[in-house]
Length: 147
Image (cartoon, rainbow, N blue to C red; front, top):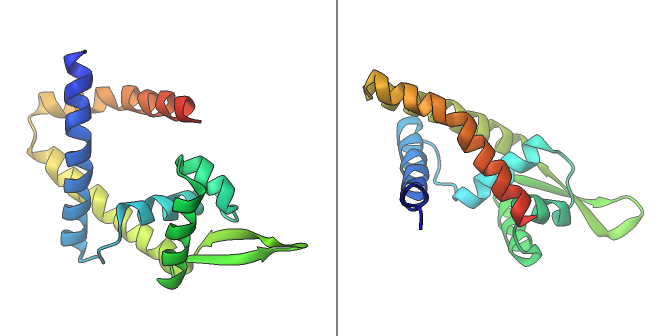
């Protein structure tokens, strides 16, 4: 196995969790599950999404999405409305509370990352900047494979 792939896989999870913790701490934001943030981000990007479409977009089982949505509706993060003409269909939208929290998370996350990047050597900052297009391409490749 490629050592670059192994090391990248080992670094991504801890990086994501560390960023989320630091962001919450710095901005004194509520402890919202990472999966809830993913749902809020998806619904903010594509309002009025069906649960099935959300499951497909996040590459999750419909039952998992149903459980997430139920908890998020109860927390006031997602608004669920019945689709006109189909009482079984539903449309999901990020609530105003979710949109506000997401904006706060994103702003705080950018500050946390900027501060951390400032502590890196110039060489490492440049390496990260140069790697961003490759990381975006990997994300795209993996998304296509799991669809």
